[in-house]
Length: 208
Ligand SMILES: C[S@@+](CC[C@H](N)C(=O)[O-])C[C@H]1O[C@@H](n2cnc3c(N)ncnc32)[C@H](O)[C@@H]1O
Image (cartoon, rainbow, N blue to C red; front, side, top):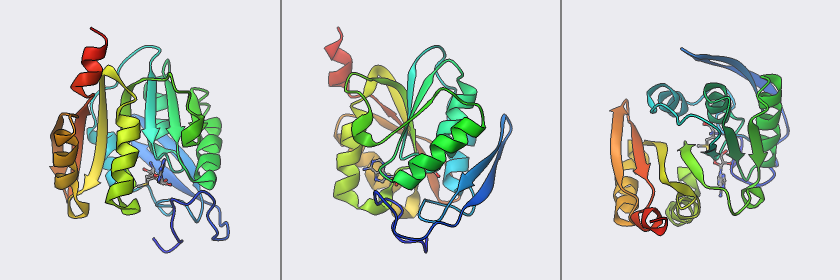
């Protein structure tokens, strides 16, 4: 993307508001975007793939998480599909958070909770984590990020990530698996991998 790094806390690039359509079989939303956020010109192809091919969501009053929400295509879709859930939409980028909040409000989705990473209460465990993760922040930072949030999965929780193959999807899958988050490939198409990740076993045994 040409608009500088989209994962900074406060993008320096001047604002230029725009809109994109998110059209899925069960979701039809117009979303506000801006420069300085990821994929401002159209819903990212990987994000769309995840939303089309991801698994059914848990039902009931569970907590869900969109890690790295950007302007909110994933968070708003999860909130539409799961009206009884609370969807945490987390991002470091303040402009992205503002857009995600505005997009959820405009869509009447009162169940989206937009937050900076440190604002999510410690006790929250999520039933399902969905993410188009920020691969470009670098391997060490990405591993730290996943370590922090994958251990927020509830004992039977699962995560669903979309990663481009040429950006290291397969080695990331191996790394997660080696760290104890059992990882399988749900689907693969046009250079994207959809990865299903289970909570670490140690986490699951904690509750027995
Ligand atoms: C690939 S983009 C996906 C954005 C959005 N979910 C979408 O599909 O359009 C990854 C997002 O992760 C955010 N991000 C980067 N580092 C982060 C961190 N440490 N914690 C939370 N979000 C982060 C970026 O600001 C960016 O919005």
